[in-house]
Image (tube, rainbow, N blue to C red; front, side, top):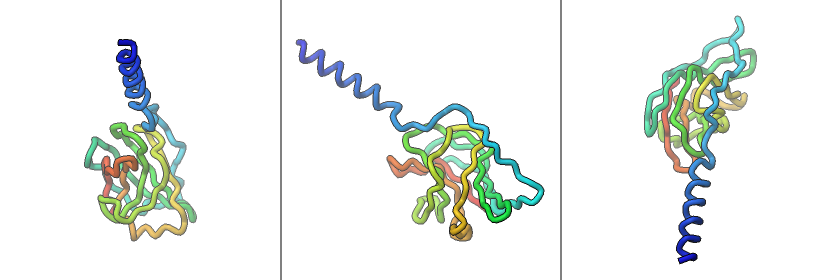
Length: 141
């Protein structure tokens, strides 16, 4: 009887301790990126849902030699191990990771390496690396 209780308690503790592991922060972020008079919009698009609800806009700006992807406004459902990708298609066949998603909501920016050729990438994607799932994407035009 004691071993049954122990196994039940152990199972419950493992279930509840793993449930939130790896999820993206949910506190709203308010990035300080502000376009200047010399900033140019290179590409932009609205997010559409794929496997989960994702809303908002993705815009790539260039200021001087620096390119930045800005998600604003932005919200997504939460999940484990969420990243921001630039991708050639919605399946992330060819992609570059811009880093972990900073939050499930709020304005956030991601610097794009100067060696990235934007013509190779038509989508900004919120991608779950744990399960290889496209949460939602914005076609960049």
